[in-house]
Image 1: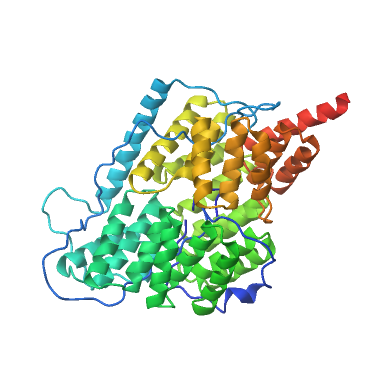
Image 2 (image 1 turned 180 degrees about the vertical axis):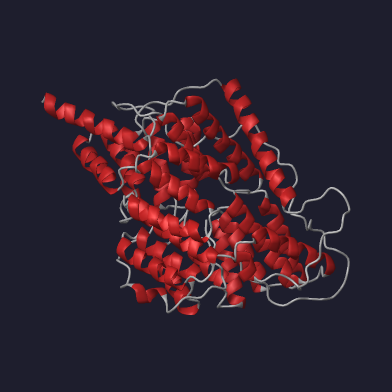
Length: 547
């Protein structure tokens, strides 16, 4: 699980484990879990049944290419943190403690526009690689009627999509393959960081329902799609519809857990993951079970469940996925050596697995190997231009004194957010975090307030607290900062934000305690944020010495 989004897993729905996740530890502690913006995502569930009736091709583009995405100049600023500097008093400050450097509107729009074009080209290239064509050439046909979920989760997703496309050109009324193709598009969007897949996923899944109303794989696929777009009420509704048709649908069970956690219904989410563990124990459920425990502060049980999941992993994709989850858990606790060991195992299973490459780079940066971290993240963002790795790379460039390169990464975050919005993704949480540190602080506050109205979770509480802070409203921010850290979830960024709010609000004693807790938990949580915490602690020490 990464800092924000969302987000990245293989975990095939068809996977099974030995025993249930509940075998790995005691009941979760009382209390609430937190938001899973970046929690595990299940794999693709195979469609059931096939209508072999012939007929004209449906009105859905079988090729993976998408229409050109218009990108407006009015996009949200990028996420990340400016260079570290001492903090003093109230006002608009960055994660590292200083006010963001202003940039002229015209210059920013030019830079954002250029980056948006670069992203659009990258996504277009991806579409072409997956089989989009501008002519009438025949697509190579699959020798089998459709593609199984195991193939989709087995590391050859692009080939599986091509086979599904070919099969559906021969059998356009195979509702099961339409649902599987829709889920595969969702997976492509997630794995490749390309939200332009989402409209195609929606068309394929809706086509499946046209052919066979209320078929549970398509309903579960739409639930997963809604969750990917951050439409969690819809995700819950669709998951419940799918489970009404098939109470054992792994995809629907997992999407229901995700939606409940994202909506802040933590007790319901715990009950839902226990039910899923009873009905369909396996890696997708195990990883959610572990995450719910982690979010409640029970890291020990979370680790045990993930270790159980890794022991049961049989495919390269599942090994890479679960080992990466263990690496992320270790990194968040400041155990960089163990994190690097887990990432090495993940990359041993799949040396192209981008979440493991990103995690390894974060752990390298936290260990002091900034050069290797930069090289690794440059590799990641070339294929995986998502806000998280872009911001970390920007922070590393800034820590090295290269503000120009850093700004380029933040502009790519802007462009990605614009493209995501154009493809139906609710990006208010990303906008709030990004704009608070690198752009229009008032826009950050508007986005954070809008997201808080939709769902009250620890992630939205943290975003709102930080947006209020950078707008100089620290007294209002303090309750939200405390709420973000109240569930037991161990996140150094949340502690850092709270400590900075406490400091700016004049609560120096609590600020020192909270900032020390952030660094004790994970001293390398952010190249710039950690430096900002240390600078603030030095300022506090100087104040005490002066007394």
